[in-house]
Length: 235
Image (cartoon, rainbow, N blue to C red; front, top):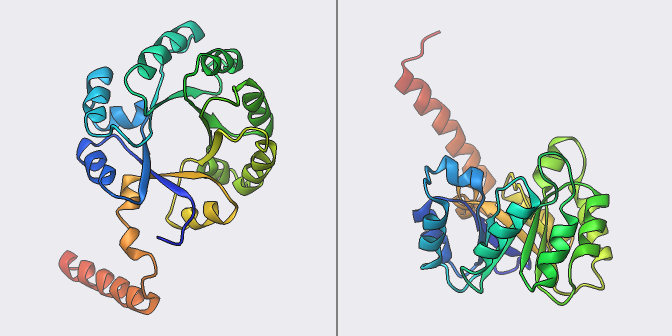
């Protein structure tokens, strides 16, 4: 892990998991989103976020707006940004109607609010976001590499193009989002991606990095045998 150059952010909304991974030195930041919060049973968005920020008060952490109207997004973004200097506000690249958030991104960025522009899938979106960001203000562009790969496309091409387009904006970082497996960390690092956000359930497998494959094979065979025996299967 010490040889990996990319920043690893923990992605989740389980409070104990957030506390645990915030303590890890190799975790450089954290992210969450409304879907993860819903899955974790969060009832009050603001209360939960402020509870997290009592623990995560130094490393960067991203919280997402959830209004579908740009005025509502703006108001939510201003409130979220006020919660802490380490907070990045997640803004979706479009609303649910497919209307681009670029004017909002420009307005917020010019108001010195750190943004994490999320749900980016295309080069056109990347270009419009970069043109909307204030290069003097810190920002993140979240490219949903895992979901792009789900369609049969190689997300590395878009990330490489984005790296070239960002040469004039040194305050903006590219984030590999929707991570599917540990190997994505190596893939993202090898192409020079700045950040990868990794779900807690995948981070839990980090002890497997560099694990002996012969031993892993034997353990897998034993697992199948043990489960078949416990189930009482007969042929």
